Image 1 (cartoon, rainbow, N blue to C red):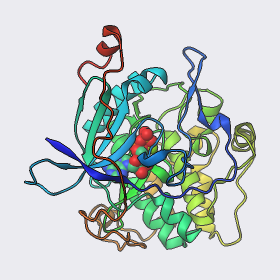
Image 2: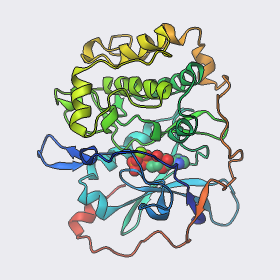
Image 3: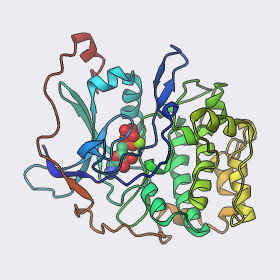
Length: 359
Ligand SMILES: Nc1ncnc2c1ncn2[C@@H]1O[C@H](COP(=O)(O)OP(=O)(O)O)[C@@H](O)[C@H]1O
Ligand SMILES: [Mg+2]
């Protein structure tokens, strides 16, 4: 049994100057119909998102505790309204999220503990990661030194390697989906767009700044899109902004498809080289796309002399310590009424409810 704590996550303030509407559109190849795509969250605490931040594309995540007080450890509960899942045509993705996340077991990926549902909602119960988003850390310091960016990149690479070893592509790697635990180590979250890809797939998905050229031009994509996204993320960590920028989605797409990233002078030559390798437009020549896969990425000189087994053991010192230092410290939460999960029947038809059977 779980009880809602009187708090939910405090959102990290997002200061995005422009809101690009296409950032929120997903174009599904099958139907040709526009659907929503994960936008970069920009609602500040208390803003239009209300008390439910942090919310992502599909749901909101809140802090819960086991009722009865036997186990005080807080857990994270992702709540997705069935009506929203249906409206956004995300039933398949939601089922995939449950199934694929359940297959993952890695110290640098958040653990899924169980899933359940009521009349109105789908729930995913996860271990609670209390250090906040890497996005928030980067915004607070503007940009990372080489060593800090390398630290986060190495942990993310091992998480991606585990995901790819199961033929899964994450497809939504971004700063907001990289959380930090109480010691400052990475926990990758959000398998909402994850998919097993054995050859290639065509669905337009992901987050604007991070979408690889083969997603944009719908030539068919595979796990290599995650290496592109990693290139964007490393660039963003080192400079504080994404490599391909524009006033609207089309401008960003154009840049990603046809221009090379401009490197600020402070980027070392190895950093330029690893980012250049990951941001190779032709996916067959991209770093990570060869037969060596993740090993090729790990072997890049930017990472020397990293000992990868020590990365896995979390033996390297994190560059930033989250301010919340105890896993039961609720100081990073906002107050929120206990009965805030709306489980009132929502008038879904039997056929609609059947789509969620087995979740
Ligand atoms: N296990 C967790 N512990 C702490 N915060 C989490 C956890 N899972 C998600 N979050 C927070 O909630 C946000 C939204 O969750 P996410 O799974 O990314 O949903 P969406 O698919 O809606 O983007 C994340 O960006 C993160 O800030
Ligand atoms: Mg997310």
